[in-house]
Every structure is written in structure tokens, then in C-alpha cells.
Length: 314
Image 1 (cartoon, rainbow, N blue to C red):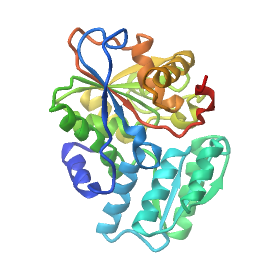
Image 2: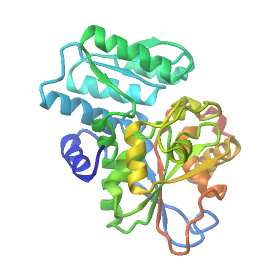
Image 3: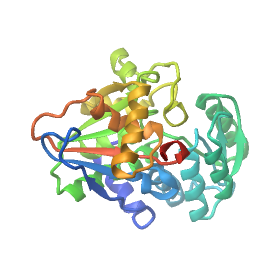
Image 4: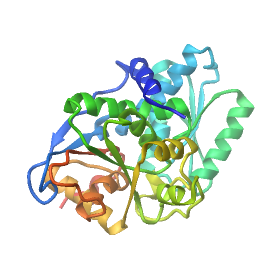
């Protein structure tokens, strides 16, 4: 379980290691007919996603506690978390080994290797890569790094929420963000608890949050669709569920078609290149899965940009 104090501690720990990413005001129009709206350009973060925040916090917290071994770190990832752990490990000066599904996009695998990580491709689902990574960490004594279900990882992601509060002067009512395993959602919801609502948006084909809230705990879900490479966790993390249930995170589901359209909209209107998974948050507004009230102040998190942009250029 994490709450605001853990997120604040993470902010102090990662200061100077991560970028403060900008807020972009949304033009008045169909997307923001009433109230104020911003896009949080977190895809401009180191390694192209929010995950650098959690990776740095986890590794630096382990180092401060004397738990960072010479063997370095081992992570499992569909891509973005692996990139973040590889980058953070290199910056801290320890080796990284990253297990990814065989379905991971080639652009992410190439970047992992460019960052100096040893890459092992296993299975077709994140869960298979995670099982192999856990065994490797146990065998070598390396620090296990989970993509979304470790307290320091979630707290590190929550520093994005503190940044939103600072940049808006606390004048924000709702934050929309994409959900896979839920690490970003958990951190931001903990950071904003009692201050702003969090809406967790996920594809209809991977409803980890919606199913967990309905079932009273995380449950396995099938994984399919255009956003499976980045939101393809088979179940919501335990930490994410606990924070979502405690803080009242609102789930929203969007179709693959809505995600594809929102990704093209982000490029066409704002020249922002984002992943399909990232576009889910924007799709909730475009498709009406979440409808802000008159005057509601909304921030939409664009959380990742590790994608092939060739299909966006027309």
C-alpha cells in the first residue's frame, strides 16, 4: 500500500533524475467544450514514458537501503518498463537484464540493447516474461524490478501527480490516464487523494481495472487489441487495486477503434506522437466514455511515445 508520504519521499529521491514534463493547454472546442483542459506530455520523459520515475525510485531506494547488489537489476516488461529500468540502471552504474515477450515491438527491443541491457525474449505474454525474470533474479541475486506491482515503483510514478498539482496550482479536478497493470494509476491516485479524481482508462479487450473493481480484487483477464504491447497485463496489480478501491478511482473502457482515432487526433491536432495504449486516455474523452461536467478542470496524461510513427504521417 502506498499513500502521499511515499510519493513525496519518491519525489525527493528522483529529483534531478527525471524531467519535469510540460502541460499543453487544449484549445476550446469539441474536446474541451466546458472548463479547462490540459495534456500532460509525459511521453517526453526519459526513455519515452512515465516509467523512468518508478524505475529510478526503486533502484535508488534499494541503493540507499544497501539492497542494490553488484549483479544489478532484473526486470520483465512489454517494453517501456524495461527501457526505464535499463536507463536508470545505467545512470546509477549497475547492469540490467530485461525479459520481454516475443511480441514486444522491435523498436523497444532495439532501444533496450542500445541502453546496454541484456535482453531475453520469452513467451507471448507479459506474465511469461515476468515468471522467467523472477527465476533469474532468484538465481543471480539481482534486484527484482516489477513493471507495476512494487511500492517504490508505484510511488515513483506518483511523482507525476505531484507535478500536475504544482503546474496547475492545485486547480485540477480530474486526471485521466491509461491503465494496464496499474502502477501509474496507483501512484497518481495516491498523490492526488483528497485533491482530485482519477479516471483509469483501459481498452475493452484488457479490462483489468474494471474487472478487479467488480470482483472485489484483481482477476485474470484476456489480453487482446491494438494496445496489448503496452497495456497487456493479464491482471491489475495488488497495490493498484488497493489504492483504486481506497481512493475511488473511476474506470472507463474504450474500443480499439476509439484508441486508433484518438492516437491520430493527438498527432493531427497537437503533433504529439503517442502509443496506442497512451491514446486510450484521450479516447475516453473523444468517444464519450468519460464526460466532464461543466467547468471541470481536466488533465489527460499522455504517458508513452515508444511507437512506430510511420502510420501517422499522411
